[in-house]
Length: 270
Image 1 (cartoon, rainbow, N blue to C red):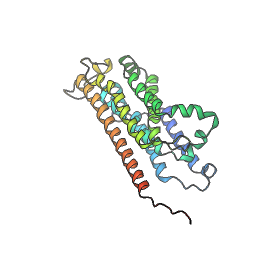
Image 2: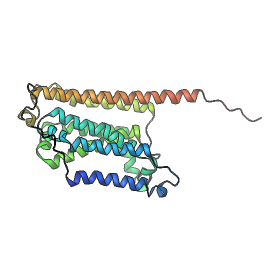
Image 3: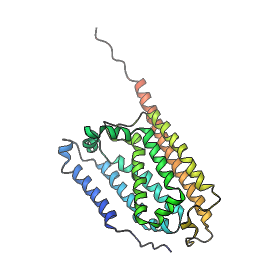
Image 4: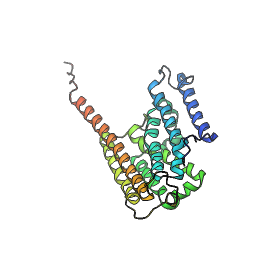
């Protein structure tokens, strides 16, 4: 059974999150005047950044991790959704432009950053990484090997940051793409994620042995039902997030077009 008192306290997890929180506090606090003289403390963005760290910990450090690793594919899918959507989105929203500028403006990094912020690359890596890790051999390997499991989750979070960059970039050097491009981007990625959803949801076989032979912690909830629920969660959450992103991009595009149309035309001096 799941031990709901089981919270991970491994040094690499807790220590890593504390280090990120400390580094953010130092850069936005005592060192802020050096990075961006006169900039106020980013209260809202700090709240978003620390919320991202908290959600990351809840995803991989709470009893949800035990449920997903040993018992339920659907619980594991919830972990992935938390890492790829709220955690990654809030992490990017929490970064002021001046905080990332020393990296994004570095001449030596311009080429790699340009490549890895192109929508075709970010979207492609997101879909490819997520799909490949759901191959039965790789997925079950991660469930049996703790180190591999950590690598899997870090890769999901990393490619999620790349995926959201064309929409939420805080960088002046590598800004978000156009609103029309954003709408097309999220639609194409949703289409790209459809095969892995169909593979999990409509498979007549139990794809992952760990869950096939796991103890049933919910009476009457079979491995087949668990697998269908996991696939449905993948699609429903992914679609909901994509539709929200699409709607926000559409609204911003409409608002910017409306404001441009109604700007007063300055008269030429006589």
